[in-house]
Image (cartoon, rainbow, N blue to C red):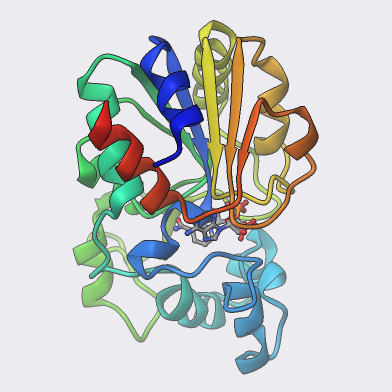
Length: 243
Ligand code: CNA
């Protein structure tokens, strides 16, 4: 067990977690930038992945967008791993106040976390572009293999996911900043911290302890109080179980 992390969490009562795709790799969902990440998947497709998850691409090539989306971004069988479950436990203990995530998989909520700020939206919410009718993930999966259409008006359905070229939700940003400004400890994990504006939010943290748990190095390693280059699911589970 990481004793330093244990001591930090033991003495923190206003923790915020900020995470990314690396939080869900232990649930079998690939991240973007690792060797086995989604960006490598472009080899199978005629366009780079960055292009295929952009807003322009969604409107110009909805068929190719959805082929890639269902193939590489939606994992309906995935379940929470040690990281998600430990964070849910920390929230129940009253120590963790919010999870701010760049993930779109909904696994934090599935683990039991109540306050989850989804900077990049969720695959579990989908809306008709014309009449705004709501569709959940199961509704979408029923139309897998084609461009999902609204059952009421026939227009194309769009996932409530922030694609490249789209703005983040103002309210989610405001709430995230508020939590970060009031936190005593910030745990950053499973993120390469290269996607903006999400990564830029970390400047609002002025608390005591910054902990980084990421398999690879990031630009923030030098400014953290504690850096752990290990699997986040294993690290968090061990430490939170001991609290
Ligand atoms: P990224 O750029 O792919 O970085 C992931 C980081 O996580 C890398 O630095 C890895 O070293 C690290 N990592 C991978 N596995 C582990 C592990 N088990 N323990 C610790 N560290 C690990 O992903 P970011 O989140 O930084 O990029 C932001 C994108 C990714 C957002 O727009 C997301 O929407 C998008 N994304 C989300 C998901 C998901 O919802 N699960 C999956 C893939 C991509």
